[in-house]
Length: 230
Image (tube, rainbow, N blue to C red):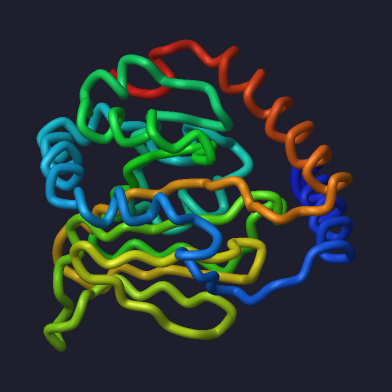
């Protein structure tokens, strides 16, 4: 087990003792600004789809974060991530390519990280857990091609429950629960991924969350701009 895995397990155990909640969360309560993204999903989609033409310049997830190699490089199929904001660090050249998305993000200070996720046809992301419960994960479907059955071909299992998001559909969930994805469609699946501060945390968990995010933000800021694509 890697140092990252040990650290993630320790942090999860701390949060698990202090915070409880279901795998899927009520956006109206926990992330009211979700409506801004849902209402503008077509404009966000248009900016994400432009990137398809230059996808080879968008880094694979494990190229940005070595600890994600087991999830990103497991099957020689691409999982590429176009990062606009990471743990509060703005990736300015990428935000500049997506002015509508950037404008919405500026209205949402509770959004800690934002990226477009591109899953190649057949890509499988094996079961895994996020590192800490201080943030929630928000998915917005932007280009969700159908599978052979006519339903959205990308299936995401969260705590054993399958979800198939269509274009414009969204899900707010706790990624410390075990989850996995497979893209059974014949085309690239594109989604907007956000990490959102969890509200209503005890003061000690809020402080720990900000400390963890601060450390990660320093690491993100130290990355050369070229690491986030060109």
